[in-house]
Image (cartoon, rainbow, N blue to C red):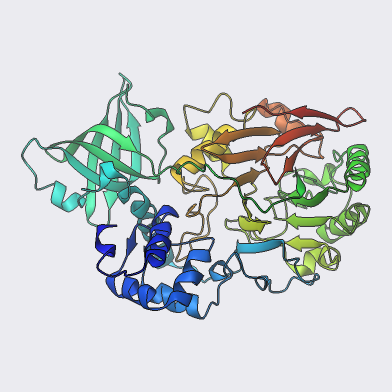
Length: 497
């Protein structure tokens, strides 16, 4: 902030520029800073954006002047971002799509390199903004140090091994090289480390090794203020699995009756797995009621038609839905879900998707990475299927929705779209069929139950899903409660942070 005074003459401009740093910006290049101080309208546009990059460049400012991406449309705009190929009525001003994935890139060897380079670039900037990591040097330079001075590096974990005494040996790499890091068993967070995440390391150098004194995750800053303009209520559901023999139609009927009677509930967020799919796993043909996924969507349309058209349904796909099997997932193609695209109150987005509802920023993610994350992480392995918000917290700490490459299918784009660059007000997931709520640094964590009863596969794994249990949220305050339809007449349970 010290260099700003020479550029800024007015207090208003200074305050606005300072606000950019509080929204996650770590660096403003000199030419971009000069442009912002000379163009008040451009500065206002940048300040109003919901999703800012870690660095403000002139290229970014040119994109803001002529936005072609939905994430560069200001939050305060009265014009909703264009949603290509939606087929539904125009969006209400109260709900705007901040970002959804639509690209379908060609994939080659370079795509994998670009993906990890993008991940490293985005997350290393977050880490670099931490005071403890300001002096981070490249690994190639660290290797030359022979004195016993404290050193700092930021790198991606390419390998983890555990010694008999519980210490861990990490291989950490950046664009200049790799180095071994020895981590003591007592170090905080050692049981949360996973492959392919980007971390900051502070320690003492040895010969081709760093003896770690601290390991830092990018983590999220605390959110202390809840948006003031929200006034509606919303309900979060997931994993309908229409077409499954385990789909509980009685729970659906009770839910629809309840939500239609609730005039104050304006939004229904659906966290993926709309249908059970066809050919998803061996023997599935014996566990579904329809032969094709198109028939499943026709059945889903009949279910959704029972919901009042005054309710706004915002929907993402899951791993059972017929879209690309790797993340990020594109919206379900029209060819499969045509009956749903014809519904004016339903909006089909990607997985993940960012939505701004009455000023409340909601990150919607189905949660497919949970399986690999839970099985790979000592600290949450025993409890996270019963408390999925434990996995959500870990993803926020790592600032990535699917950090372990290979445990969950990730499309090797030239850019890593699964980095959590913006801090949401609400982080919503499904997938594990278990209801849960929590609060992490001001972010409301929501996991919804399902409309599918416990499957044989879940029994085999020892999972205990909570079908019929969903989450209601007052968007004006963020206060939430569980609504339980599993025993007929719905009951509610308040949530205490």
